[in-house]
Length: 173
Length: 192
Length: 235
Image (cartoon, rainbow over all chains, first blue to last red; front, side, top):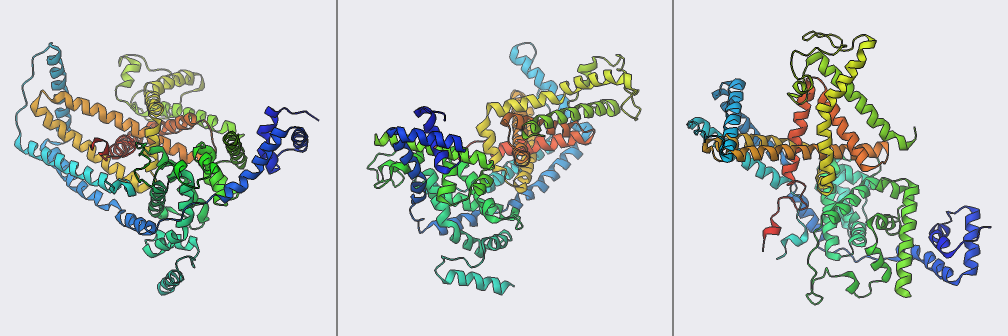
């Protein structure tokens, strides 16, 4: 039979207590325990831990737990309304796309913007002149302002609806 | 059908709210369809075990209430996706375990309160009667703490613990053995 | 197959599928995931097409006779490296750099409703960005801000795609079995790359993923533990 050292026997105490070791290893552990008082004390500790874990108690749940859970659940709402402003956004996009004459106009706007961006960066680096500001198209500006407002409000609605419920402590001063 | 269900729920409340007449799987099915009363019965039936589980994990009464509330809110949100053909308990405790782990993961450590501030959520080591084992369990790595709580405190079988944690039975056994070994060493050092 | 080799085998299979899709994409439609990368590969329209590919504009079988398919395979490998591989590597780098934040985002993604809400939030964010960029254009000097916001949005979308891949990885892990987390995440990212490489539909699917990912990033404030709460700013 293999003679175990304390360092070898102690990690085996838990599976030994559970009866998970094979016959030869269990016999080796048993033989070591017979001759080592320190490891016998460890074995007693290992034997007691499962029962002591089972005996651990928890305080009774507070009386306001159920009402607070139902109140939190009442605040959970399906964000169906999150889809509502999308209709307005699509409408505004359609208006802008129509005003700009469709995809051709949008891609032209994109290429103008890219050109102006590189000119502004060049101006910052001192290599080019500052480009002139584009002409003010009132309808387009108003449509974009409306789109910014609607999308910002829409995002705020969605974020508010999908935030995690605040804990009990969130309301405490 | 509706009157039978309502009568069963009223009967469950009438006996002090302790025993749930409808089985949890039936309550879960009803609550998933939007029945608030069925959900309330489900909470009433599980609140003690869930609170005990949360308390054993976070070792703080105040935080245990927060965790318990989050678990039940997540349950409410996810009941629509629960498949009533499968057992309820493994699904529910997997959800509870994940909520608990996420809560601890995103918890920002709060500044420690002074001992005489009267805060009920103080260091568990300061609470009277708190055993050395409970303290050691609270300090254990969560990978070892969780299977110990599920098996010894909630009386789950090893198979159920493995299902809840998404591990094999052998992996669960290994973690439990290592967790108990750490507890044994900690208790021996404190006693020695 | 032992559990240990399932994930590597799946990854290899997905990479092979990606190469085949690149081949199909390059042969039939001459379109790439990233516009312009084909120019990087061939450098000029005048370069001869590699053997094994049909003439341009001819919609037929992408695979030529056997001896000529070798150069076609190498071409596809280059195509894959120029397109999907870069995105996969960047997304994997995001997961390695911000694992806790990615995990928080995935934990919030507990139902299709959340995914749908994220898609709507992503659409709203994209529209907000376009409209705001146009308004900034009017001031000219603030235009670089629009460029910076666009870059931030692109990074946010990439982070969101990485989180979606992580979610897919978690779901697959329950069915296939455990493995190194990075291997599982990488496999999920390559699966997304395969989706993006599907001819025609791939660009639409990639756009859908990007917008949903951007929405997730915005909703969770880049995986912040407390979301959009401003508690830390409160004295």
